[in-house]
Amino acid sequence: IEAKAAFEDLNDPGNRLRGVLYFHQAIQAYWSGYTERCHHYIEKYMSVIGQDVRLSTFQTEFYHGLNSIDKYRGKNSFKCREIVRKSISAMKEAAANSDWNFTNKLCLLEAERQSLSYNHSQAIASYDASITSARKSGFIHEQGLACEKAGFYHKRYGDVCKAAEYFKQARECYEEWGSSMKVDFIQGELNNVQILVNSELARRGQ
Image (tube, rainbow, N blue to C red):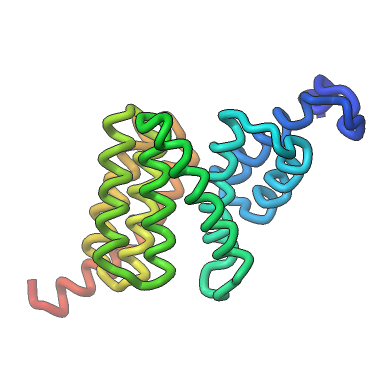
């Protein structure tokens, strides 16, 4: 409430600070796992910004694509495909001007898109490319995010051992980033996956 008060009247069309507030609320919602809330604030941000292109616009496109995939996964949504197509197009444009800032984001969106189409080899290659690029750029939180997404992909694919490997990498990244919330979340996933790994090893007699 205090933060919103600092931005004065959010209903005033002339209040250009609204975009700043909506942008940060969208990012916070995404990292907290609230897909509907993230979608809500991204739409509000885009309605305020319009055609005004800035760094936050490209960052918002990145999260819009990822969040839409989470929101519509398994629903074969035309709207989702269009959002992801637009997000990838924006990331290609951004990466062409700043490889350091945006290549890891482009690769992660590509990986998630390939995962929707069950293009296994392309998805894995893009996840790994995103992880490598984020590491080179020093984006430890986005390196963790790429590892997390890769972990969930392998879990859905049925390769629980690989899923555990990526989740462990994600946990290490989030620990370095200093996010106890994400560390706890990933540890929960690791605990669940480890049960499946132990069952698989027992089945193999190892």
